[in-house]
Amino acid sequence: MCKECGCEDGGPVHIHGHSHPHPHPHEHEHGHDHSHDLAPPAPEGGPRTVEIHQPVLDRNDRLAERNRGYFRAKGLLVANLVSSPGSGKTTLIQQTIHRLQGRLRTGIIVGDLATENDAIRIRSAGAPAIQITTGTLCHLDAEMVARAAGRLDLDALDLLIIENVGNLVCPAAFDLGEDLRAVLLSVTEGEDKPLKYPPMFASAHAVVINKIDLAEAAGFARDTAHASLRRVCPGARVFELSARTGQGLDAWCDYLAEERARRNAAHPLA
Image 1 (cartoon, helix red, strand yellow):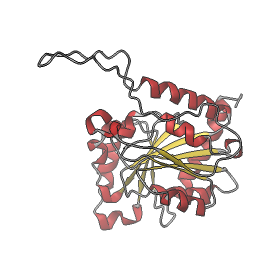
Image 2 (image 1 turned 45 degrees about the vertical axis):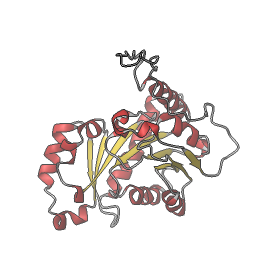
Image 3 (image 1 turned 90 degrees about the horizontal axis):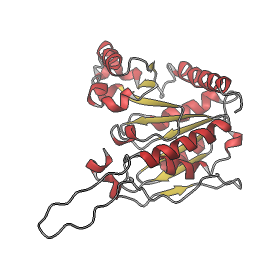
């Protein structure tokens, strides 16, 4: 998907945030290599053949599995939160941090094309946050997450939330090493969003319908939205909430706490 949109030529990527003294065991520079070999130049006016020797995302997937094993050894639940811009990811994260105080220690990795604004907002909620600015890249990848995680004290955390770049296309293809992927949908975006972006919603473990307090004003067809979700991601947990008013937030936070307990019980070595 990224080859079509051209973001692979973007950059540079920067990681912002105070580094703690414990290095991440696999921090390395980001080259954004989509792992395809270049063919030699063709004769003037002649055809050329490009041979693909490994899947485009093979390198990212290997790094993601490495991340997953490392996070699991730390006893972390890692959630990859994705949405289109303006759906309310940062506000939801701020409120989640407040609701989980005393239950889960939460850290955040934030992805945006530019600025450190969201990380500043999240730190004001009382959680450590590392900002990744991607330049023109429309997604985070496993290597970026590894580098950012190296600047967090993961031993002091129970939950790591990755706020992905606002985009419902390219992030669907990139495993970051997360335990669960949550897709955020606001009522102002329309109830057919899952049908328009099926790869993203089909990969979701959970779907959060945000701004539910505005549903009537926005003319949001709730039954149609749930029918779309059942069609595209029938196994996903669905939460209706308002990050602004707090409606429905307890169920979402309970889900995160229960998922961490369940996954750590399944992997007792963590």
